[in-house]
Length: 326
Image (cartoon, rainbow, N blue to C red; front, side, top):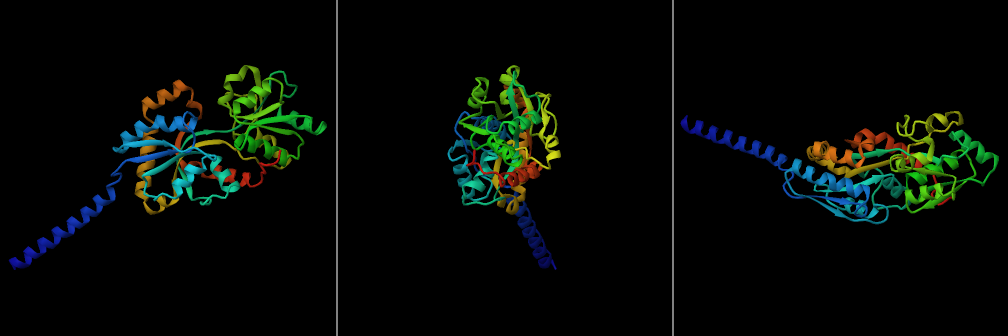
């Protein structure tokens, strides 16, 4: 009897050890440094956001977090590296939309739609159509009417292969308007050209163009609600309803990407990383720095799932746009 009791105690002890070791094994993440690859060059907004987050993310995870720049091909190089990396949660990519969607549709990467997903959205911003203060146009309908009255006369500037460019081309195509789209290497050169009278309007970013607020007026915003910084701007979605047109925001979404397999195969790791990223993004010291930099209006620090529909809508919108056309 004693022997049987001893055997039972041994078996129960072994079973407990197995169970507890299994739990511990599941919780042993992360066990090594985590790397964030930035899909753009050092100094840009995507890089800046990642580097601002890094020390607080490191504090939340309890392991070293490194940031490495891997720019090129509109974030495609970094995105491809992520896709070819084991989806174990140790490699993340700081990137942006609509660059990911543009790459998917125009450059035929090795990955497909849904293979890379945003675990967190850091920045969310729509687009704005601006004109000079002395422009005769005071609404987007005025712009439409002018383009129809004098086809080919007017122009709109935008940064090439971005949401700015997508919005301009989408409006031109969907409204069947004849205006020139003039492309620039950045949003600032486009805005400068407009102020100098070289182009008539610009598709741009609301926050970035606050530096020329007193010299411009906004005809429309692509957001679903009014923009408090550009209260005169019409909401494009409302303006285009009579035309039977629905317009995506074609917004700028700075995000942290992971492979979808991380969420599918290691849901507990995905949740841990997402919680740590959001907690790091809500650090009071970080928020104070962002406010000082003027980033607060576009900083959302939200789970990627909250923006799934908007990003999917944009993908469908991009399918209808030919960026090679002008």
